[in-house]
Amino acid sequence: MTTTARPKASFRHRLLRLAETVTTPLLPADYLDLVAPLRAGAPLRGRIVAVRPETRDAATVVIQPGRGWRGHLPGQYVRLGVDVDGVRQWRAYSVTSVPGGADRLITVTVKAIPDGKVSNHLVRRIRPGTIVQLDQAQGDFVLPAATPERVLFVTAGSGITPVMAMLRAGLTARADVVLVHSAPSRDDVIFGAELRALAATGALRLVERHTDTEGLLGVHELADLVPDHAERQTWACGPIGLLDAVERHWADRGVAERLHTERFRPTVISPGEGGTVTFTGAGVTVEADGGTPLLDAGEEAGVLMPSGCRMGICFGCVVPLRQGAVRDLRNGDLTTAVPGDGVLVQTCVSAAAGTCDIEI
Image (cartoon, rainbow, N blue to C red; front, side, top):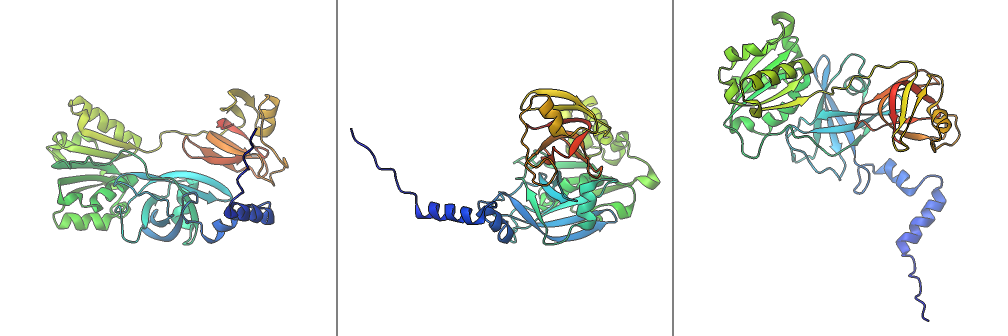
C-alpha cells in the first residue's frame, strides 16, 4: 500500500488565506475594489469621467470601462448598474461612441423621462468619479458586414442614440443615408448640431419633424419625404407606436425583410398593494399582502430563504428581483424591475407591491 503526500499549498494561496483571516469579515478583494475597481479580473465596472448636456433633458455620460471590457459594435447597447438612493438599478442604454477609441472611453446618451429614477439620476445628479457596474455590449440592431448602398433611419426621441454610433463610425462615407427624425422641437433634437452639420456637408439627408408644431409623423408621409423608402434597408428606433406603424407599413408592401427595429422596453410595471409572488427557483407562487415581508411570505410557503438579522442591517437576505415591484417597509420606497435588470432587494424589509418574481 502506498500513500501520496498531499501537495503543499502554494505560497500565494497561503498568503491569500492569511489576508482573508486578517481582513475578516471582508475579503482582500473588497479592499482592492476600493483602490482598483477597474482592474483585470474584477467584475466589470466603469468610472464616470464626464457628463455632457445634450438637450434640456438629455446628457452624454462618458465612461472609462474596466480592463475586462470587450468592445462593442455601432448600434449595440450596454446595461449599467447604478446605485440610486442606496438601491442598485440596472438599465440599458445605447453606446453612442465609436468602437476602439484610442482613449478606451465609451459614451452612453441618456434622456431623462418623467419619474425615471435612473435616467434622471444619470442626467442631473451623477458626478465624475462615480463607479457603475457594466455588462458587456449586446444587441443585434447593427449594420451587416456588407454595407447596403442605400440606408434609411426612422427615429424619434432617444431612438437616435444607436443610429448616432453608426453615423460616427463612418457609415455616411460608405452609403447613401437618409435620416427621418422626430422630436418635440428643434432644441429637443439630441445631437442636433452634429446631425445638421453632417447634412450641411452633404454626408446625409436629414428630415426633422418637430412634433410640437407639426404633429406626429405619419408613416404614410414617407412616400413623399423619401420616395424610395421601401427600397432602402431601414433601421427604425423609437416609441412603440411609431415602430408598430412602421412594421405594418413595411409588411403591407411586402418588404418586411428590409426593416430592422429596436424597441424601447415594452414592459409596464403597475405598482399596487400586495400581489402574487413567485419564488422562481423553488417553483412556489403565493399571494402576499402589502405588509408582509417577502422573507416571511417565502418561509411560510416552505421556501428556504437566506436570512440574517431580519432587520435590514446585515444584507444576508438579499436576492434578485427578476421582475415586478416591491415596496420598502421602512420608508415606502418602490423598486421595480423588468427581466434583465438584475435589481437586488432585501426580502426582510420588502413587501410585494404588485406581481413580482423573486430569484430563489
